[in-house]
Image 1 (cartoon, one colour):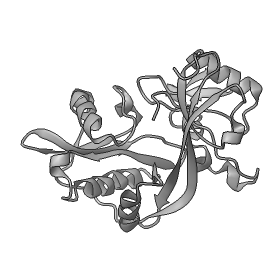
Image 2: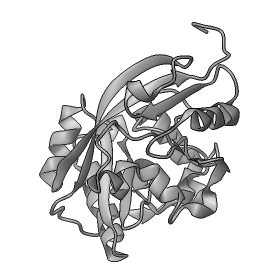
Image 3: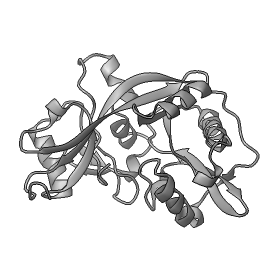
Length: 247
């Protein structure tokens, strides 16, 4: 996935359900609990580049909205998005598209884990190294500022982690769930998801998460933990106008 995404909603009827915080979670987060991190150009909101790759547009972006996004990233920049390809202006190049799913807590058996330790800024180099090998999704040097992260160590080495990312009002996304290849198949990821979910529930939020629709193994696992499918999401890779085609 390209490094600098922009998050936009999928095409859907303009109804009350359309305004659910999880329909445009990055925007809801940046207008709510993560407002202190928001950078703005017009109606476009984004996280700092070293915190999170997400940028959020209004539910119905217009030409001015797309100009603001292009101004944030510059000509020929590669961005990633979720939404309908029909919303993308003709002068933006669509590089890729894929299907994802959004899952929400539907009776997750959340509980703390005695072996899980809270991770902090000093652990970031190890976290970045684990993400580099496991590739659960974007994790940057300051992503840890988005919420709490838990890890499991074996022999002093970080071998599994999971934490919090987007925080729309009343909800918290579980993200960066990953395990070192040498320790997979032992249920460490499941334990950490339950532990992170327990912390989310403790403060009164509801857990949710995203994953690729093609990752059926992960979907079955999350469903077995008590998550249910809420909606499908289309992921897009885009290039802003003004770049060199095919570069």
